[in-house]
Length: 275
Image (cartoon, rainbow, N blue to C red):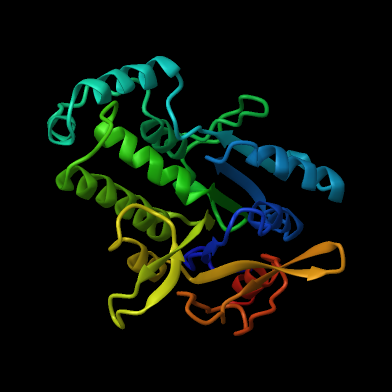
């Protein structure tokens, strides 16, 4: 039995769309954990439910909350289009944001204060009270980034430097809190893009988020930073993980260094139990 004072690992799983990130979340259930998913990806929950059904896993151990990163309403886009047609970039940047009605960023944070399952409406309380028998998943950072920008600039169509800084700082604080205050397993998925490594000046694949300075800082918060990748086997795609891919910012603690890891969270869970 792991010590209640030993914080479970936090894992950052990054990769392009279709690399099996959401699919692999099912292995958290196979590891015996109760899994809570905050999904910002359209159709992401459908993918996970299909996998759970295909593997005949216990659905009572899976809980989810879908929070769309974009506020609904094409009227907002129509209003923005009208502003674009009548203004220049400078005027648009200086526009004062209107009150952001029902921002997804606030809804996400309130979900962390009291997780209410979309499946049955049951409330599970403050996620910081979850223990090592549970996992909290944010799928994915791309949606979180969009939420942070939206709550900062609202219906504006552009942002000035200061507003970018506000949104970036909000994301940084959020990830730090998840990796430092949670007492359960924490998994965040992310897409990738090439950014300049501030230490070497070389281009490296990092998480896709706001700005250029935030992405290189994010891995420091996590125990494991993994790349979700695919291989071809005839007509089939084979998913794998790597913590040893050139020009990627990756990290390992529980897992062996390899470019051909099984896309499975169970070894991380078992390493925690052994500790």
